[in-house]
Amino acid sequence: MSEHQVAIVGAGTSGVAAAVALADRGINPLLIDRADQVGSSWHSRYDRLRLNTGRQFSHLPNRPYKQGTPTFPTREQVIEHLERHARADGIELRLGCPVERLDRTDGRWRLTTAAGSVDAAEVVVATGFDHEPFVPDWPGRGDWRGALVHSSQYRNPSPYNGKRVLVVGAGCSGMEIAYDLATGGAAKVWLSARTPPNIMLRQGPGGIPGDFIATPLYHAPVPIADAIARFGRKRSIGDLREFGLPIPDEGIFARSARLGVAPAIVDKELIAAIRDRSIEVVRGVESLDADSVWLVDGMRIDPEAMVCATGFRQELEKLVGHLGVLDERGWPHATGEKPAAERLRFIGFVPRPSQIGFAAKQARRAARAIARELR
Image 1 (spheres, helix red, strand yellow):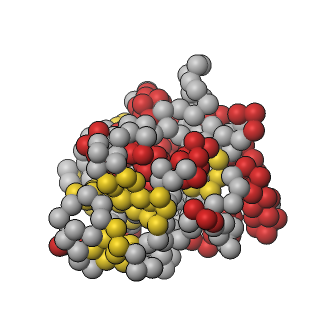
Image 2 (image 1 turned 135 degrees about the horizontal axis):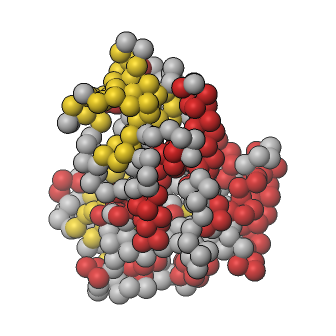
């Protein structure tokens, strides 16, 4: 058994943010992850991925990106940013070590891991949103003879050259993958949108990152923020109703508050591909058979492959479900500096534009509170 002042579960963006914020206060944390890489979800994403928010708002605490980094860093640049700071002095990094359960024992926290127990005075859980890929169990899915992958398994369009492909899910990843396929040699691309998404452009007029405007709106009253965002969408994107993407009745900020759903942040080139029908938007998937996909409106399509950008599950129940710290959705009922239980905090579970930057703010505040408690 090993003992530490602070253990952080999850070495992704939020976990590394917590680690460097603690190190800045002279606290040497244990940063532990089930994967064998820092930022494992970034390593496994598609090749063309880049941040959909600006680098100014999307870096680790007090650690901006290297000079010369573009406004929207690439996947490789984000990975390098995380790797470099996760391995800095003062942080003990332990990879390939799944944490199976967290318990309160003799006034300390005990982490049960595959390699033995770890005791810590304080624990930060930072496993994040992208923990377990989720694919719906559609009727007939077992009969489907085509290729079917989750978006976390998609890399690039080369395996789909000349094929008909259905992308399920109209969030950021689904839209970007659909565009990647449509411009990368697929014969036909459908984009299935069960619920019309709220959409924002990655880059506004003058090259300003969209989150430069969106982030401050989270501090405004929801009806005002939604009205401003709706006006901005009409001006920058226009009416996409005839292409299958009407503006939702529920605005960006109301939906975020109710469901924890972030908007789809995309480039204007993708909107053009929807308008010229290089990407055909269709309704949600109802069922599958051997060769066909049936949609909720009764339409039948015949893709040869499906890419399911259908999200992830946080899967916190096994780790902390017995501690009474989760709400009915399975989300932590307290995040950031506020502990969900004595000396137990969650970071990175609030969906926001500039997610990395928001987690960095949470990490700095949590580190301040942890340092105070340890004293």
